[in-house]
Length: 203
Image (cartoon, rainbow, N blue to C red):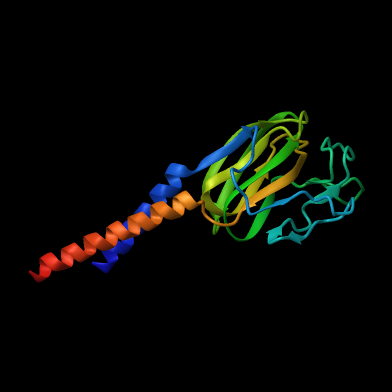
């Protein structure tokens, strides 16, 4: 019986995740709510950002000042290449989270192309989509995922010159209250069903 209830809970959680999950694809707004936002303005130009607030950019990203190194963001932002020799372009590139998150959205620029966005949880793909990206109006459009659990996002801009820049990374580190409420309701219902079955079996 316990195994049956556990299986039902997992099915419920997966169903809620699938039902509420959605790609943020060239949207005019980011997340509805976020735990924090990284704007990268405190970084020095040409440096690797490392880990910021539990988000790991490692040495694959380089901070660049506004309107430099081919970028069109109006503030300091991150790129998958550097402005000096010895900092080659890396593509695809990852954003790694030190804990499971439930949403992430960011502004992104590339050479005009169709970019691929992929979310992972423990190495397994949990969401993917392709979206139009370019160099125009960089702070106007948002990309990312919400309504599902993940710990990594890969960005792939498939042109031979696959230059990528991001800014204003919003992160949601806890589930949305509506999702938590649905899960709680489901758990109560499952517990009630189990109690009813025990009573019937004991009668």
